[in-house]
Each structure stands twice: as C-alpha cells, then as structure tokens.
Length: 395
Image 1 (cartoon, one colour):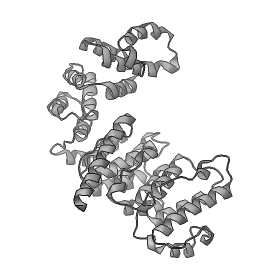
Image 2 (cartoon, rainbow, N blue to C red):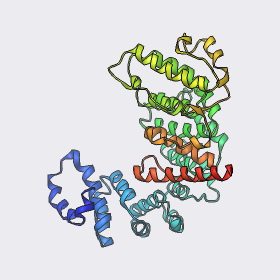
Image 3 (tube, rainbow, N blue to C red):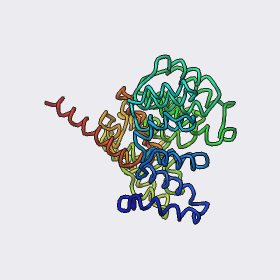
Image 4 (cartoon, rainbow, N blue to C red):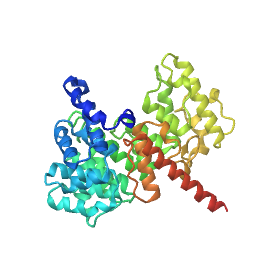
C-alpha cells in the first residue's frame, strides 16, 4: 500500500501476473491489497464491482476492511443502490463505518429491501442517528438467545452515547454469566466477545456496580475482569489484582500491563521483563503503587509497609483512596478519558471509547480497529477541543 503512493495504477497490472504465484497463506492479504488498489485507482465502477465480486464470498472480512480503510462515499452509494443484496449489505456497513449521514435514507431503504434490522440499526448508530422505536428492538434482541445479533446490538449501545435499557443490560449480563448460561465451550469466541462488549458498557455507566460484581466472582473471562478493574480504578478492585501480581512467577501479560498503565500511568520495565525474577518484579510493582498511593492521600506509604496487599492493616492505610478513581496515577477527571489511550491494547482502548461516548452523551463511533492514523486524528482533535474549553472556563 505504501508502494501504491509512488507507482499507483501500475500496481493493478502487476497484481494480475502475481495472482497465480500467491500461496494459501498470502491469499487474504492479496485480496485486501487488490480490493484496496481497485478502490484507489480503478476508474470504472463496474471494474470495482468485479473485484469485489471476485473476493466477496471467500474473503469477506478482507473485502470489508479494504473498503473501510480505502473506500470512498461514491463506492458506498453504488453498493447501497446495487440490486444484489450482498452488495447492499456491504454498503450499509460501509455507510456506518464511514459515518455518512447523507446516506441515511439509503440505509432505511436497504432495511425495506430486506437487509437485517440489526445491521441497519448499527449503521444508523455509527452515523449518529437513533431511529424511533429502536429501543424496543434492542430489548427484544437482548431477551433472545442469538449471541451474534446481541453483539451487533451491544455495539449500538456502546457508540450511541445514550443511557438506554440499563435494567435490561444488567439482566442480560446476569443471564450471560449465570452458572447455567452459555460458555466459551458452547459458543467458542462468541461468548467471550459478547461478555466483553456488555461489561464495557456496564463499566462505563456504573463502574462501581460492575466492579462489585466482578469482585464477588462474576463469571467473566479473566481479561474482561482485569479491564473492569482498570476502568473502575477503585482500590477495592486494585488490591486483589496487586496481590495476584505479587504471586506471579512470570512477567505481566498484555492485559495485566494494561491495568498497571491505565491506573498507575506507567509500566516499570521489571514487570515486562521475561528474564527478570519474581522478587524484582514484586518490588517494582510495590514501589510504583506506593508512590501513586502516597501522592493521592496516603502520605509516607513505603513498600516495606506492605505485608500482603489483602491484609486488613494495608487496607486501613489506604482509607484515603476509597472515594477516588485512579487514572494515570491521579484522580480521574474528564481530561483523562482518552488521554494516552494509544499506549494501551486495542481491547482496552475500545472500552475507553465506550466510556467517552457515555460521558459525553453523544455518539462516538470511532473503532479501536480503525486505521491508527484516523484514530489518532480523532482523539487528538477531541483532546484539543477539551483543552480549549478548559481555557475558556478558566478565563
């Protein structure tokens, strides 16, 4: 794709000669590049459609990503108007991914033509539009048993910025995590995805309540539980996690480092060093935690004061942290919601985008899977606007 900046349309001709030489492992990437270059350099809409048709069945995910990353509004219009509903479906998703409000009428028309209501509702939500009677549709899906449909509806709730169907969301999570509910074995990949999506919304809306349920043993994937602790930032959740870190005989994994970075503002090198020893890692974690806790009301706290993080005497020393939500080593405020989010994993950044939508009360459809450059531009613009608003308030 970088070469396309210099060689342009000539690469399309080269792809034809390369096609027979592509290995099985390279086919998905080849499909992505071919669709992307077609979007950039094919002049005729019929030629673009031909390339999409060639790859659309076998490599649909690659086609979707290429359209999302390198498509344009004209392609979206053509897809929405296509007589083939499989192309119309691509157009509906692309209209939402590209946030094109001028195409809302075509999205509604696609629903009338037979595109599933869940897909059209998600496109509308990403555009920033919430159709009438959509709330009833959301309730109906959450009360059902189709995890694939529920994942789409949870994405609607995540980006729309409205505090909708909160009681139904809690009930849904209780059913999803019940001892006799679905599991990763019964629904490989799907159960973990919907649990993570639902918990991201709950943690954004009611962080203390979500944390309390996780502390009490809510049946969720370990990484999801760690993200709840990180986003909540409450000492009640941090203490058992710090105790867990103390007992590890390995470096922290990605999800564990996310907690440390989001809550404490940095990850000491000792914690990620696979060649280090347990005592060194424990001392580094305790040193960082004590520095942050001391700066936030627990004056004079030192690593040697920590017998074990779960001891009652340690919790008594940390009483000043009870009302505080820690973020980057400081009490959480609106400025911190997206600050330094690119130092985190994609998974946790997604939770911060959900939290931003809830906190702002406005739709925020930025995806953690979008091009890094687009994510950075969007977040930097938001941070700039927020700093200007802060200056106005101060003056």
